[in-house]
Image 1: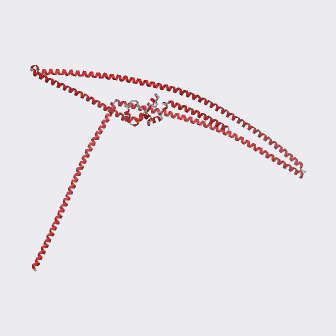
Image 2: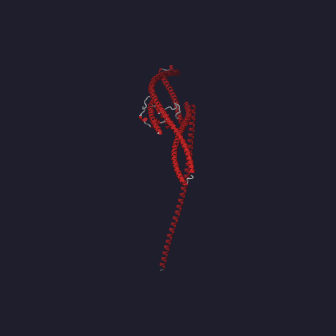
Image 3: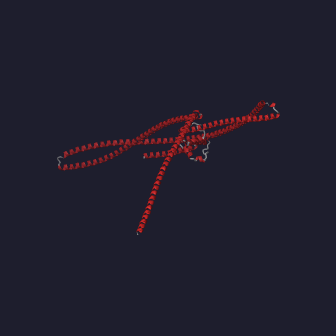
Length: 550
């Protein structure tokens, strides 16, 4: 039992030891794993640190490269700007030198100055014309104001005459009313007297009946009353007679005024009729005179156009003959120059051959003397002669090459000078165009002739110059077509173009200078319309006079 117990204890102890060993081994493994993890973390941290350092160094290198690139670009940009500045300065100096040395630019400057002077002169003339026009308009306005004032005064006088006439008519009406009123008043007074008489008779009869004693007194009073009534009646008759005389005098004055007014109206009608007849006669004379002038002018115009056509044909024939003679002279001159060049070329070739032959002979003689051929054998002499000939030929070829090189150098110099001249001409043209763009845009219409070499120069200057000079060429062609009595000589595409229509519709382009016949017909039609309107106005005036008389 004890042994079993000990065995069990030993086994338990062995198990505990084995468990302890396993635990220690596990702990050891955990510790080793922990150490490995720490080492791995340290390696990771070191790698990140190294990576950051590498990134920083790479960033620094990149910044350095960027700075170097920026410096290089700044230096190249500075060099480029310096070259541009130098080129601009060089071009400016070349321009100044061109302006100082080029006769074309000097002539252009003089022409621009002449154009400025012409423009100033034209502006001064336009200003004077405007002042004259303003003065004329002021005079016309003053004349119109005077005419209107005169018309107003005449109208006022007519109104005054009408007012006086109306006042006189009203005065006559008032007189008629006063006469009717007096007649009514007289009839009423007679009735009153009649009533008074009746009343007196009644009183008399009553007095006779009532009081016979006082009859005498009453009769005497009645007689006195009758006497006073008769005196009053006499006074009233006198007043009526005076009023009738006054009315007759007023009627006579009214009749005289009416007769004078009728006489004045008749005189005015006679004057108007006379003035109308004179106006009609003057109008007929004016129309006949205008028709005569028109016919004479039409004849002159036909003669002028025929003369212009003949002159133009003669000029064209003379120009053709002159051009033909110039062509013949030029052909003869070119043929003569060509023959002369051929002759000179042949003479040069012959002279060159003679010079080469003389040079060869002199060279052969000099070599013969130097080598002393007479002392050699015949074979050696032949060999030396051949050698001398080869040397002479080589020297001649060398001299030919030298002459060809000199000729090529001369041609190169000539080409260089031609290139320089062409470059100068190009720069002069560019400077001309630049100067014209700057200065000539405000001088259109005042530039002298010959300032533009050809149409390409006008096209290079812009649309404003093209439009203006195309307009001027259109006007010149229209005038030439009119002189040739061929207004529709231009093609339909050009006649229907907007610019052509604008030129024809322009107020500054007086088409009546070109189509006189149409304008003359229009003038005659206008005169006929004026005549018909004048007759209509006369009829209206006659009707108005008749209405005023009524």
